[in-house]
Amino acid sequence: MLPEQLELPWFDPKAARTPSIPAARRIYVNRDLRLARCDWIGFDMDYTLAIYRQSAMDRLSVRATVDKLVARGYPDWLRTLEFPLDFPIRGLHIDKLLGNVLKMDRFKAVKKGYHGRRELTRNELRALYDEKKLRHKSPRYHWIDTLYALSEVAVYVATIEAYEARGQHPRFGKLWSDIRECIDEAHRDGTILHAIAADFSSFIVRDPELPVALHKLRSAGKRLFVLTNSRWPYTEKLLSYLLSDGPVGYASFHDYFDAIVVAAKKPAFFQETAPLLERLADGTTKRAALPLERGKVYEGGNLHELQAALGPGHRVLYVGDHIYGDILRSKKDTTWRTALVLQELEDEIAAHDRGRDDAAVLLEVQQRHAELEDALRHLQLRAFDLAAAIGKGDASARARDDLTRMKSLLGSVRRQLRNLDRDARSLRRQVDQRFHPYWGSLLKEGGELSLFGAQVDEYACVYTSRVSNLLPYSPHQHFRSPHNQMHHEL
Ligand SMILES: [Mg+2]
Image (cartoon, rainbow, N blue to C red; front, side, top):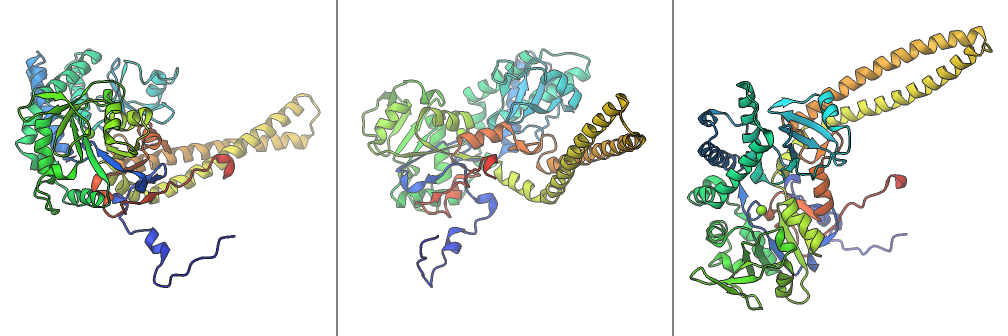
């Protein structure tokens, strides 16, 4: 029995509970999260507070990588290649031994694979990856888990294709590590950061709702901090671009935050013991003194020191985009709650909506397939028993007729099953195409969670496409997860 309801004629609690937020801008909940219990909210900067324009970033990264590869002695024709920026997604694995790119499901089974942009057949995948449990964390494989890394995949597949078209066979592992070193060098030596900082509007989406969302959290008494791996000169320019002259009217981006920690070296930040430093106006640093002060800039540090600095009663929500460096590591090493910013989510939801009808037909086909398969097994058992009885010589003439009929029925069921298999494959391909021409959905694979989707599910308390999606929610919101039922409870 429900307790007696309080009647408030002017207030419809159902309407208040379901704010009409478009699906693409909602916050999705894996584990209950009460914002009222978060005193501190921390943010990563790149791809979290700052939304990057992916194709502009990819073009810049590809150019920088190719220049450096050619400088290292790779052939000049590399510059003339077309790099397929529409090929990679997050959550792929590079097989450095064979030069393949793979997508796995949550059980670490390889479900899709390409060599260059040639799709590996099911038989090839089976022969290469089905023999034993795939050790996806071994040095043979590289996990593409950030949006920064997409350009590396585009360079890798185009270069392999070009070499093989010339009848040459590159060393796949060496090529991958050279690409990795070149892009890292381009980040380290400023090739990439200088280009972005010189023209923020080409590379960064300036979200006008971001300052308003941060201000709303501050107004509700939350204290905000930035914890980024970027160094101060770039952080200062980028935060200033994102937050200065905003609609809120703060004098400086410093006014939004109670602490700014740069060059944090996540994920090592969560496990190691680098000292927390204060950065002085002349660019030098000294050991930081607690408590942390607004307006000052801190560098490096480690989880324990930051926790101590956040003060007693700290209850932290950390918002980041990197499933490993921001979310998985903080989840494993801290009691921080986590929010994952998944820039791709808006496209993923749109594709999901477009594919709804096909997905419903696919489900029907799969159900029909399951029914027929059960019928097939049943018929096979009966045919087996009948054949055994006939073999022993104790079956009637009618039993022999039954067996003949049953065999022809079995043939027809098998034919129907093959047709349904073909229909299911083509429907699944149709559904996949709506998400991505090569890989299908980012978060799902063949009706299961993809490996990436499984990590989002396991490690992010909540996930959403951008930080400003917090704006329509109360700063004290209780985000409730749809409680999972186990199969025996259904
Ligand atoms: Mg980031």
